[in-house]
Image (cartoon, rainbow over all chains, first blue to last red; front, side, top):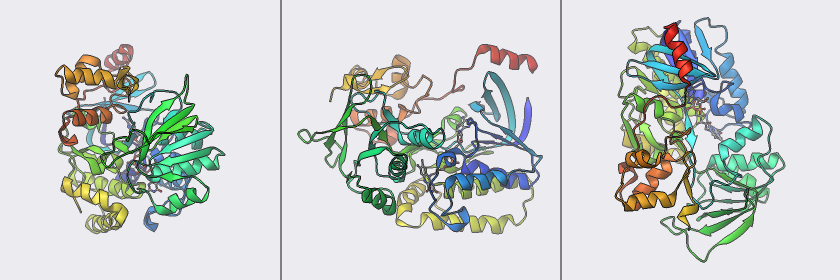
Amino acid sequence: MNEAPFVIIGAGPAGLSAAEILLKSGAHVVLIDRSDRLGGQLTKQTHMFFGSEKQHASKRGIDILKLMVDALSGYDNLTVHKETTVVGMYKDKTLACLKGETYFKVHAQAIIVATGASEKALPFENNDLPGVYAAGAVQTLMNVYGVKPGNKVLMVGSGNIGLIVSYQLMQAGIEVVKLVEAADSISGYLVHASKIRRYGVPIEMNKSVKRAIGKTAVEAVELWELDEHWQGIPGTEEMIECDTICLAVGLAPLTELMQQIGVEITFIGELGGNVPRINPRFETSVPGVYACGDVAGIEEASSAMIAGKIAATHALLNAGIEVDKAESSLASWRQELQGLRNGPHGEKVRKGLEKLGVLS
Amino acid sequence: MKPENVIICRCSDVTLKELFDLFEDGYETFEELKRIKRVGMGPCQANTCGKMVQWEISKYFNIPLEEALFHNIRPLTMGVKLKAIGVQADEE
Ligand SMILES: Cc1cc2nc3c(=O)[nH]c(=O)nc-3n(C[C@H](O)[C@H](O)[C@H](O)COP(=O)(O)OP(=O)(O)OC[C@H]3O[C@@H](n4cnc5c(N)ncnc54)[C@H](O)[C@@H]3O)c2cc1C
């Protein structure tokens, strides 16, 4: 079996920033990602980022990714496994990995789980028709593979993902017929919403999909208004022609590996659902297993980057490895994290973290 | 809404109607639904259907989402050919 002091699962912003900290200490690091390219969500984010200067705000996601990957070059203490899925995690910190047809195991002293999140689906009639997509998948198709998902799209969900992907669809010459939102207000940044409104896309609140219509693929969608309990109101139905229904209805942390070794998981709606119970050092209930980024609660790339650094620093300290200026770095990262979560858009996250008991 | 036309688990083709029928029959937990209908046992390993199942349990039995427990997850999360495992075991 392969031995490694530190293994990072997932090479998104959280995993990449954790890797840089670990590598600087001279420790051997194994970085595993199931994708064929490093960067996680950043690989498809062609838009300019919000957030703070220190986390590369106003650069495009794909350019931030390049900076983060470049920062790992030149280290001979790094082993990267791309196109490799961690398919099993065992209590003794052995990871079972699958790369194509090759199955192998890695035994770690400490594991940093940075697996991100998966997209939520919605139950409505005919929700299995071709043409029903999750928004992140649409973004991957367009921005990574250059494939148009359809020609006429209904977007469901007004979070930043729904808003940004709507805009990117239009950039690709695809018509966005409407954006509907079940809640009574827009949940993403208003600048993103204003932009797509300016391009003529109606944004309508308290509305959702009643059913998809079509023989072999989506041909139309029936919408209806929702009451305050998010139940459809009969008689308010409205039919819209489209060939694509794009669901941007939230993300759920990918905690499945941690569940396999009995990491304590708790349901916190504000953080996306089932999340690991981490402490302020980002360590889970299983010593030596850390969780950071979206897998520890849905937030943003900017916060994932800081979380990765904090988690990695504690992993080093716990392993008895000295870290230059650890205390002052940790203090300033915590402050940055707090800054990111301070605004009105951080309210949900703050509430969630409060429930988790780790508001730093 | 016709629950027989709402797919909850795409991998094992389980509809909302089938969930409702199981609830009627007295099955109340994700773990039971999984054992009987294979909900969450396909390639997605409940990453697509899981949240919807939790939501439907919580709605049907009128319990908070926090209490609509998730199913147990065990390794491996993907199909791995026995041959691949055999080769690895030989090398070890
Ligand atoms: C459309 C959109 C717009 C966004 N805009 C912004 C923005 O403007 N500003 C901002 O700060 N944030 C933004 N975000 C959010 C940001 O992208 C995420 O919060 C961030 O990517 C989370 O980072 P992460 O490292 O935790 O996870 P991810 O980036 O999701 O990376 C997780 C990685 O883990 C890998 N993985 C998962 N499971 C396994 C496994 N079993 N084995 C091996 N590898 C595995 C995946 O392949 C992936 O590469 C946006 C998100 C979206 C979808």
